[in-house]
Structures are given as C-alpha cells and as structure tokens.
Length: 295
Image 1: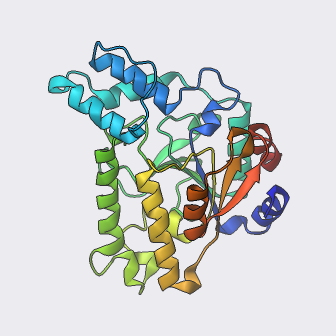
Image 2 (image 1 turned 30 degrees about the vertical axis):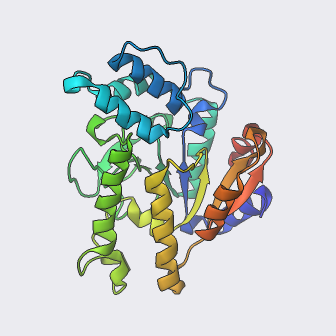
C-alpha cells in the first residue's frame, strides 16, 4: 500500500482506525525540538559533573536513564519532574494543527508515546478520566472535546508512556517499561475478566484504558522510531498479534510509516513489524509525511 491507498482506506474506514504518534512530529521543522538523546544528556549533567556530549554506543536510551537513576545519589534530583519541566515550553506548530484537526475530523483516537501536551494545545481540549486510578498509571485519562463512553467511541489523545501533567507517570527507564509491561500483562492475561478470556472482549478489565484501542482498532504509526528500546510498545504489538491469531474474527490491520530520507529501514525492524501484522509504508520525506495525509 502507498500513501494514496492509505488515505483512501482511512476515508473509507475512519470508524475503525487509530493513530500512534511519536516524537518525530515535535522534531519536524523545529530546531528547538529535543530528541530523547538530548534530553538524557541534559539529565546526565544534572546528576554528575562528568562531561558527556552524546549517549555512548552500546547502551539503550532506557538503560541510560536507569544509569542516571543509579548516579542520582539519594534521589537528590527528581528526574521525572525535571523532564516534565523541560517539556513545559513546547508549543504546537502548523503541522501539529493540521494532523490533529484531520484526525479529529475522522473522529479517530490518537495514542502518543510523547509526554508533552503539544498535541493537546492544538485545540481547546480538556482532560477527561474514564476511570481514575492514580497519577502513576493514568491510562484511563485523555484529552478531548467530549466525554467518551469508551476509548473506541471517538477522538481523544491518549498517553502510552505517561503525560507531563502527572510527572510520576512518565516512563523513561527500562525499569519503568517493565512496570508498564507487568501492569498491562495483569489486565490482558489475569483473571476471569482478562482480555484473552475471549468471552466478552468489550467487558474486560482494560476496557476503560488506551489498551482497548490497541486491540480493537487498525493502527497507523508514524513519527516513531520503534527501535529495540521501545520494549513496552513492541511487546504490546506482539500480544496484539497473538490475540488476533487466537480470535481471528477480531483482527485489525496496521501500518508503520518509514521516512526514507532518514535512511533505509533495517531488515530486523521490517521483519518484526511484518511478523506482528504491521505493513511498512515507505515515504520519501518528512515533509510529505506531515503534509499529504492531512490536506
């Protein structure tokens, strides 16, 4: 499938799609947009006097954050709060506006791996809670225009890795991701009201969280590296595929947009994506990615 075919599909199936958006949307045409590597180097200089210009090879982004926590003697610096403060000044650009406006027109959910509220600031969106749990895992909270009956029923901006408003919810390290995996595993696999029980998929105990979107919508993923360090989201895509294999009548599609000007997609990433039912769509440039679909 190419971009034209995807655009046609979206228009014809807008009721069954959702979007997963990564930090690429913040870095496009934005010299002030922080990469996660730049953010981690900033945190490095908050907890140690040693000079470091870039994250060294051989350590993942998530592992690097856990090293920062180990160096953060007596938790002198609240690193999660520090990240929340760093993201406080980010504001949307015109392409943020176009993307969110179009997805809102399609009445589709957005799931973002970003912690900032740049997407929320494109409109007069309020914070809603389908079911409040705590500020550590606010998985039932979303920004939107209207209160939703459930996560599938319309437009909302949901936060996979936490959101800036609740700094304790921000998932940064490998330990954080493992905590998210464990929490999601309990919802998906434990108890009579688990997702894989299969008897009442719309009444499982994760139905009021953004997890419900992952398993019940076709996913369009962009602005996201989805490298090996994306442990939590990659694991969810594996579980999603397992669920579809067990309950084939509940299957949904998926697409991942790779921008060729950033280099060739690795054979391993392509193998992973295609194995979990996500088709790779190659786009020439970031400009085309952040313009054509949203016109």
